[in-house]
Length: 126
View 1 (spheres, one colour):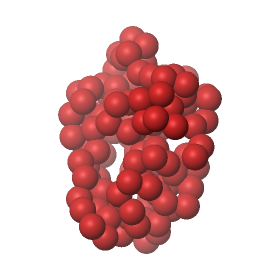
View 2 (cartoon, helix red, strand yellow):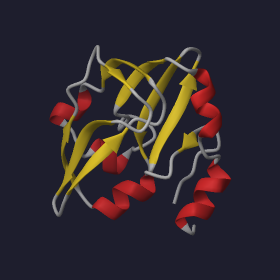
View 3 (tube, rainbow, N blue to C red):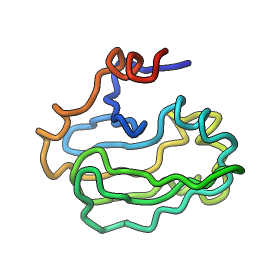
View 4 (cartoon, rainbow, N blue to C red):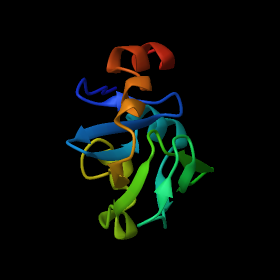
């Protein structure tokens, strides 16, 4: 299983990549394996402010639907347009083309509360 060191992680299995004052957010490889085949991603929050730990969408797999939790506070700038037609990217490339949203960071200190790759691996028992 892959745990890229340059990312930050949440206990709810989202990852965050910081790019200046913006953040790219997705779900981890562990999460997508636990969910199974992703068939639909529902995020309709562009332009909305989202508080840390607030639900910002859902991921639907063959077996279940799971909420997506915002790991840091910010305003949603973009939803990955590829997910409308290719939700399976979350399964095949969760840290690349399978990202969920880009946000502008509201509070950069939120990042300090996130887990390192090593701490996340320990959390999931990898």
